[in-house]
Length: 247
Image (cartoon, rainbow, N blue to C red; front, side, top):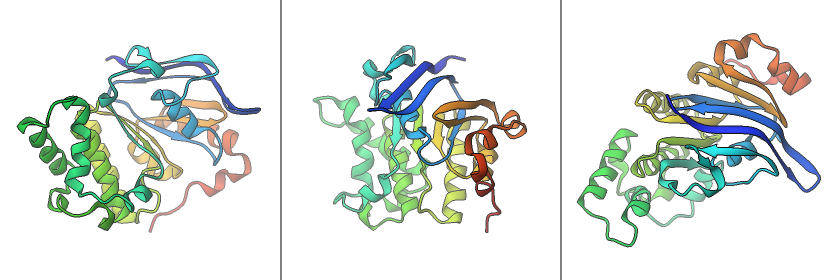
C-alpha cells in the first residue's frame, strides 16, 4: 500500500493568526479519512495544504510522493469545495457538460474523443445521475449538484477525492445516499478525505479520523478516536453539540 499524502510538521498562518500548527499525518492509498474539528479550527486550511492549494509556512507536504505545491498531475485529485453547490446555481451548463470538464486535462490541446465521452457517460452512471445528464446544473438540488461534481472528478480518473463539507444544505435522505456513494467509491480503491461536522455520520463511514483544532489532537482509526478524549480536548465545552440523533 502506497502513501498518498505525507504531512510533516506543517504550520500555516494567515498573518499573525495561526491556522495549522505542527501537524503531521499520513494518508495511505484506500483510506477514507474524516477531518473533524470546531469552526475555525483549520480543517479547510489543512485540506488545502494536503492537496497543494496552499504552501506551509514551515514543514512539508508530499502528494503521491512529490512536493504538494509542485504536483502537476492534477487530474489525479478530485476536489469539491465547500461552496460548490452554491456556484452551481450560476453555471449555465448541463450536467454532462460539467462532467466533460473532467476530461480537459487528458485531452490537452486535442479534441475530446470517443473514449473521453464514454468515460463521462460511465461517470454519470456510477454516481446515479445519468438521467439528469441534459439538465441544467442550476436546476439541480444540492445533493444532485454534489453528485455532478463527484462525477466530474471520476471522469478525470481521480485517485483521490477531497471534499470540504460535501453535505451542507443537503437533506438527510440525500446525505445518507451520498455517503453510500462515497462508501462504494472507496471500496473500489479511491482514497477519500472529507471534512464533516457530524461525528455520528462521520464515524459510521470513515475508517480514519483526524481531529484538529489548530494542532492535531488525534489521528487514527475510528475506534481509537471514539475511545480517546480528542473530541473534548479539541472542542472543549462545545463537544456536546456534535453528536445527535438523526431524523
